[in-house]
Length: 314
Image 1 (cartoon, one colour):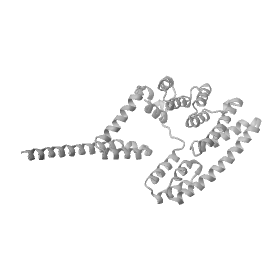
Image 2 (spheres, rainbow, N blue to C red; image 1 turned 45 degrees about the horizontal axis):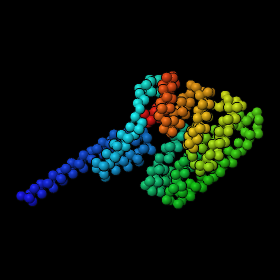
Image 3 (cartoon, rainbow, N blue to C red; image 1 turned 90 degrees about the vertical axis):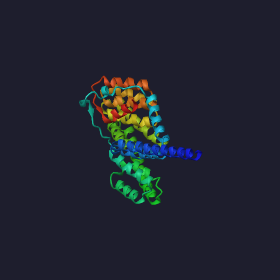
């Protein structure tokens, strides 16, 4: 009798375990299917999503509970409702926005994937395709290739990157000196310097000390425009500078230029997004939602990037 009860108990445990495994498999499959469309639209998130799915599959109960707890914690920390219906306003106020460096992002994602699976042939082909184009826009991709285990690929990427960055240093310094001594034409020189430098600086390929030096030059050019011919200091120039200062966590200087943007371009979307990104990074919820309320009360057209920022914080 005791042996039969023992066998029955083991049978029930095995049944429960099998049900648990099947249920966990269903949850993982549902997670993958639910997110598949989202991953197609944003390929950069595919790798992280697959890793989460693998953890959920290999760690029944614990894996799904861990990720659910993480989501709950995020909602508790940033649980204030932003009333997204008010944010979207109407279809006329939402504008599709494609980032200027979208081509670069398409290069970066395949290179990340090739590095992850040590696919040397694919990586070499990708690097050659990058170099055949305008390599200045793809420095981030080349920087990733420096970590390749394939020495031929890493050496080639390092050589190309070194040449491009040396050319940039020399030309940026030349434009900077020209801006300082040109007097009446200094405003035009400042515009040239800003537009030339941003293409490289936005990719964050320098070490922090050198990046700071170039951002200081960039800021000096913006200051010169503000003092000598503020009409040439466009809202986009200020937005670029705020983006660079944000990456360096120079919040005091960024706020200074946010205020300048509000002074010169109170109705520009970039004025609001600069404030929002700053408060988002600083995790200042009250200020973030106060700025968001100002944006909601305006008639400014919202782009997709801004809408995604609002949804993320909300």
